[in-house]
Structures are given as C-alpha cells and as structure tokens.
Amino acid sequence: MAVVFEKPKALTDAVLHYCPGCTHGIIHRLVAEAIDELGIQGKTIGIAPVGCSVMAYDYFDIDMVQAAHGRAPAVATGVKRANPENIVFTYQGDGDLAAIGTAETVHSAARGENITVIFVNNAIYGMTGGQMAPTTLPGQVTQTSPYGRDTASVGFPIKVCELLSNVDGATYLERVAVNNVKNVKAAKKAIKKAFQNQIEGKGFSLVEVVSTFPTNWGLTPQKALDWLEENMLPYYPLGVYKDKFAEEK
Amino acid sequence: MAKVTFDKNRCKGCALCVGACPKGIVALSEEINQKGYHPATVTDEEKCIGCAFCATMCPDCVITVEK
Image 1 (cartoon, rainbow over the protein chains, first blue to last red):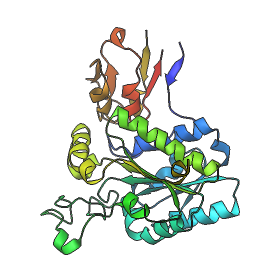
Image 2 (tube, rainbow over the protein chains, first blue to last red):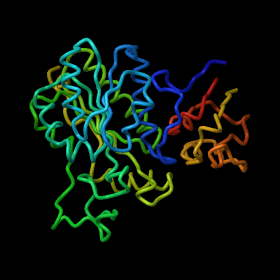
Image 3 (cartoon, each protein chain N blue to C red):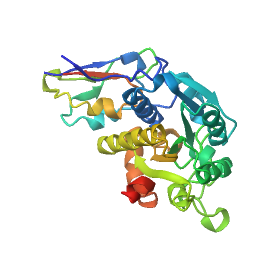
Image 4 (cartoon, one colour):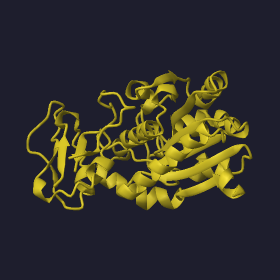
C-alpha cells in the first residue's frame, strides 16, 4: 500500500487553533503542499498577518516573519529584495489585506514585486469576533451591521482581484474557492502556480481564496460551504483575472 | 482496497469529510476525543475507494489515505 494522502511536510505537527470547519486549515495545507511539491521548504520565508491567521508562524515548518497589521506585502518586499534567492509569500485575510493593508497591497503589485500573496476572503473580521469587513457582502449581517450591510452608508465590498487587474505591475491574479473537492483542487493548482511564477522571476502573484467562517457566520461548517456557493460566488466570481505571461503566448 | 486512518485527537468534528465522501461511509463517532469533539471515522472500510475526498476537505490534516 502506498500513501496517497498525508499531512504535508511543510506543516508542523501543531494542532491548528482555528474553529471547527474553518477553511483556513485547508488553505494552509494547500500552501504547504505547493511548497513540498516545488521542493522549496528550505528557502521559503512566509509573512504572517494580523488576524486569525497570525499564528501561521506556528503551523508552517519554514522561517516566518509576523508583520504589523496589513503590512505583510511591505515586509515581504524587504525580505525578498534583501534575499532574492529566497521564496517569499504573505498569507493574509481580508481585514488585513483589503482594509488597513490596501495601500501595501496595491503598491507592491504596482511595483511588480516578485512575491506571492495568498489572500483569504471570508467576508468578515474573524479574530475580533465577526465585525463587518471591507469584503462583507451587501445586506450581510455581522456584529457591526446587525440589519445587514447598508451600502448607502458604508459603501460596497472591495473586489481585490478586479481592482488589481488594472494595476500594470501585477503578473498573476486568480480567485479560487475551497467549498468543495473540485474547487480545492483548482485552488491548489493556482497556489502552486503563484509560487512557480516567483521561482521563475515573473513578478507579483496573488491568489484570492474565497473561504468560509462558520462560527461568525452563525452556520454549521457544511451549511457555511453552501452559503459560500450561494452568496459569495455570485459576488466574487472565480477565475483568472490576470495572467501576464499567458497573454504574451 | 484502500485504508484510511483518522488521527482522532486532531479532529474537531466539523464533518466536512462526512459531506465529501462519495460512498457515504464517513461519519462522526459516538465517542468523544481529548478535545471533547465527536471525531470522524469510517463506518465501512470495505467500501472505501481511496479517493481521499475526505482528506482533501479536512481543515486539520486528520486523515491519511493509503491505497
């Protein structure tokens, strides 16, 4: 008998602190699988964000830096420019990347930094207890939008892939989801490609992963997957938003 | 035949594996693990085809699949 599926080597044995059914765990595993398959565990440096995934430095068995809130792409820029031979990625949630870190995100893309960004979009602030995020859907109920997000007063969600697709410096932008086996496999492919691009020196790659948050959505893990498909995917369509090198072929 | 192993004390009983199994043979156990959850288990291993869909959806790397 051969092992067909096991925990990737780029993850430590630590038990994840995430809530039951939170898809952060799946995304961590996909990143670790990509690192394993590309054989870059020894030279990869991860940048952890602020938010639920701040503890990522305990889970990835690689060197990690923890950045101030939203500043992961700025820290990654410094790490990558000082150590161009290393593979540098950030792992950020929507409260980190699309709110306080919007400037760092847009400008690192505009500069075409040769880094990989893994962006987890679950449409809510997690660690702080379920407040409205920049990516919260119109009408979505959160702790700070108890009657649903009112776009007349707080505006509309930020669609990061669409936004960055107009930035000339960005190389590769894809939105994926982890709500079923098929989409998880597609997400894995996109994440691996985002790392491969960096190895080949192609520039800024960002993969947006549409994710669930059962606890703060107030749903069971299985129902959260259904909610994602019914509500998030129509607003955040999956697909490749930019692939500079595909266009040149 | 495939063999699927659950590291039951890592399991948080989220049941995403239960929904992913095409054969419907993954279920939450009656027993309670160290964390206080009902861990996932396979009810009829003979029927397992080793597709690893359960492990693909598991957020906590609980499942190892051999074939």
